Length: 283
Ligand SMILES: NC(=O)C1=CN([C@@H]2O[C@H](COP(=O)(O)OP(=O)(O)OC[C@H]3O[C@@H](n4cnc5c(N)ncnc54)[C@H](O)[C@@H]3O)[C@@H](O)[C@H]2O)C=CC1
Ligand SMILES: O=C(O)[C@@H]1CCC=N1
Image (tube, rainbow, N blue to C red; front, side):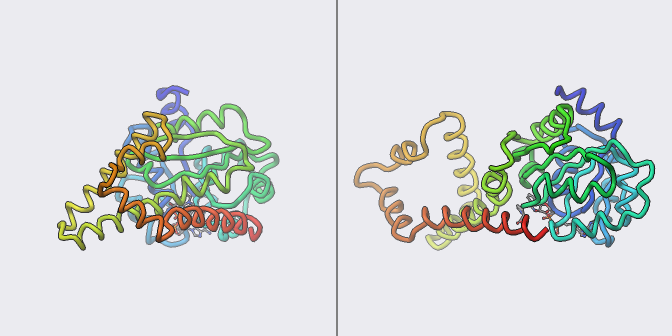
């Protein structure tokens, strides 16, 4: 879908957010920043005003009532914690006149079947798209994976992919891969921040000023990521090219291997994936 069609669709549908926290704000702010939607076409709800005032300061509409969002908007992001989803939907008292909505869930663990079961309360055959985005889409460098539910139409998939592709990479995958792939995209930034922080800490320990150390660590991570994506070469091969024989890098690499960094990263992805599956079971 081209950018003009996305803009028109968003202007016509209005964009709703049930849940107004960090992920919802990153998506809304990212879309406004990229000029895809005007703040006045965005509506968000949450039970308390704590987050909502930030939305109002940006010219967006807010409500304490989820029903209002679902009435006002035809495309609705579900951005509450998975454990609050039932409560968020059961709050809706009158469902008359609500039809033809597209629900885009960003909740970890919630399958499209489980989403459809809950949303059936509002309308028959709800159109659902399940996404696992990440917060870097706020700066146009997001990474999202998504899949459609049983009633999602081709246009629903296109609008979701269109919107999120304007904010970074967005890849359609099979639902069976959502938990594992969603951890890489959704949780991944936290793992990367931890690496940036600890590399900067190492620099500070060696006498590099904090600001400089952090800038160098972040830019180096960006550069390494670009090398993997743009050259398409294996990260192991790219690593080998940095390790000069008898040099400094290989000594650092051995230290990382001794401390189990590789195994720790793999275990983190595994543990977070299992947690995502578990959250889905508890729904
Ligand atoms: N933070 C992240 O990097 C990512 C988060 N997600 C998903 O996004 C969802 C939200 O996560 P965060 O934004 O981090 O959490 P958050 O705690 O910042 O935001 C949750 C929001 O939901 C609101 N809320 C709670 N109960 C509600 C109800 N009954 N009705 C309406 N709103 C209600 C809260 O007031 C808050 O505004 C989760 O399901 C998470 O799995 C997905 C990918 C990445
Ligand atoms: O920690 C979480 O559960 C959410 C989902 C992915 C990132 N944040």
